[in-house]
Image 1: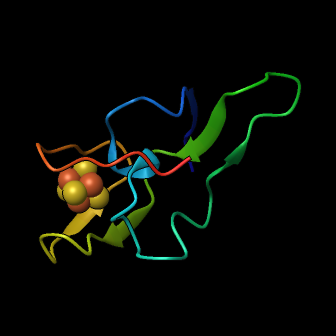
Image 2: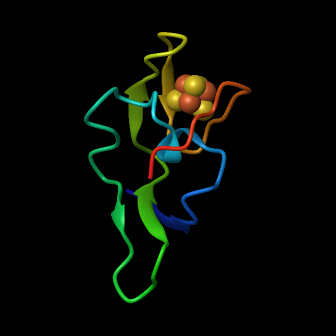
Image 3: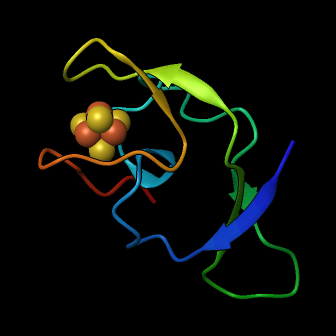
Amino acid sequence: MILKTCSPTAKICAMCSFWNGQAGGTQVKPKSGMMNFFEYDSEEKNICYNNHFIKKAWNSCGHWKKRY
Ligand code: SF4
């Protein structure tokens, strides 16, 4: 597990509505002590509900849609 921090506007799969559908990333959570930042595991992989490929948390594409 490699924990990273990002803003909810970071255009990566971990912050995208399509990553793992309704559930989203299982390791994605608000970063304690840092308002409006999220923590995620950059090694987590989930299916993208937009293109149906398995994507890593830090991947990105042109169809990114804000989740948080
Ligand atoms: S591949 Fe694109 S659409 Fe799919 S989860 Fe990642 S950023 Fe979102």
